[in-house]
Length: 204
Image (cartoon, rainbow, N blue to C red):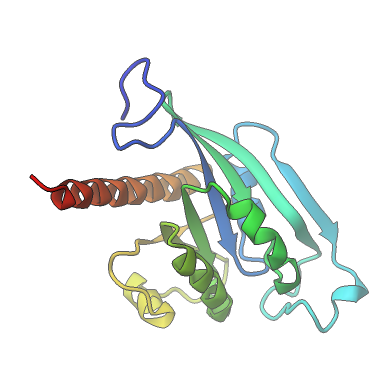
């Protein structure tokens, strides 16, 4: 992907990059970081308390007992030239004030989706679309959940064909790596397209 001794990829992407894992409450962000991180992941999970009653929607995830209140953090080396630093965002609306700080400097984002609660994905999509951060959608597998085709998910979310949608199981390292590789490929395509557009716009 990059040549020896270079500190950037051929498309101009630095070797060490920041990736966000975003999505609604209980969608699997903490699980994803834990599954793939090559270092001991940092979690800021706290037990759900009575303070969240009537605030945190547990429909479909009634067994959930903890929640991320700040961030999850992990690191994975995709190859010898590319290291990803993963930042998982908190999912509840009352913690979204943290998102701007977490998103600063991010190269791209994985938007995780639970098809049982797909409406939780809408504000997350709006957030990254408004900020023009490249993203893909990862449909997380939950035991017992109904399976939908990728195009059904695309229609439900209202995203165009440019946005990749991939199925994954956040519990399994190889599945998570597949998602991250797909995101980097999407970012590389977008950077290449921008570079081509810039060359075309320069007067000859």
